[in-house]
Length: 228
Image (cartoon, rainbow, N blue to C red; front, side, top):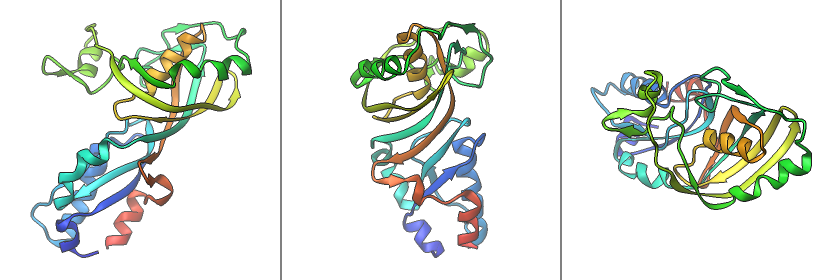
């Protein structure tokens, strides 16, 4: 690929590593593209954030293709991951410590599978209080970390597929196909509640966005090697 290709617009599929923010990936790629082709500036953006504790498919657009970011953001997404049952955390994942524990003795294989059903279709979902949504000019996670409670409105999302793929209590592995705006951390929390227990997300991987698959994605180092 030439520098002109990047300016005219490229869609890059990157497998985001654990503990990187989506913005760190964008900044790293932008820096290398600028350095390799001697650009003073070039537009680079991602089409949908992945939490630092998640891995998987990140669509990165460059140059003129950044105008199409919203088109990619709106596409159906597929995730796989792990819920830990019997315990909740304030952030609904491993970012914060366990705050409550719940019984799991009543949970059977059959109950695990039945409990996915109420979540399939168009549902109302509350985003986690530890999220990047803005309220009164502040991001919710900033308010949450400062110990401030805030009321969050539910939003309509759509889950077309939700299955438990393996279970070894208290851990269960899942696969979800869902619309833009779905928080898998909230799904973990709500699923635990519906089981009359608790749950939080311990691993998450985005495997697909529309027709794009993580199987076709490059690691960050793989991309850098490709353009050098």
